[in-house]
Image (cartoon, rainbow, N blue to C red; front, side, top):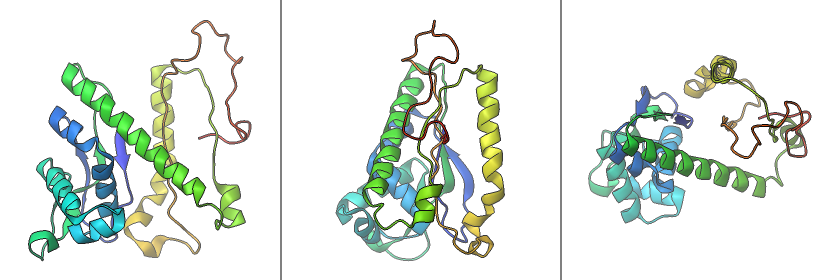
Length: 221
């Protein structure tokens, strides 16, 4: 399961870092650590002092969590600086972990990490909603909010995911090169979440359940 943030401009980061060790998975399942990695991808390199300014945490706390992230290959020291004033940088643009594992320890750790990531995604989303007052009309109308219930096979769901990835591929280069961004382009977070719904009666007839939410008829996410 991938988790990503916008990479820092001009960076030469690897495409992704994959977590498969239960210890690494558990270590990353921490909101501040996930936040620090995301901030480094967008604004790094930066020091623990700058991390504290961006997160509201103490310098000591940020320094500690950055060292933990470095232990598991998610961040690394960047050139220059010493001690708490040494800069840190993300090692990759994306963090990935398995959707499935036969190893119970890995399976438990990945589920816990996925849950922690979901909580962070929606915390950010709710925070964005709380600060929407100044968002221009054209952006408010363009944003998507809603869900849809569909009946799919595993192969069909995989195909849907691949089609979504393909839709975004033409825009990926804009993350590295600001010159490719057209006038008016702004960073947009898009959450890609699909799961086997445990709340639907297996005997429910197809078509009897519709998406929920005020815009479910004309907006899907």
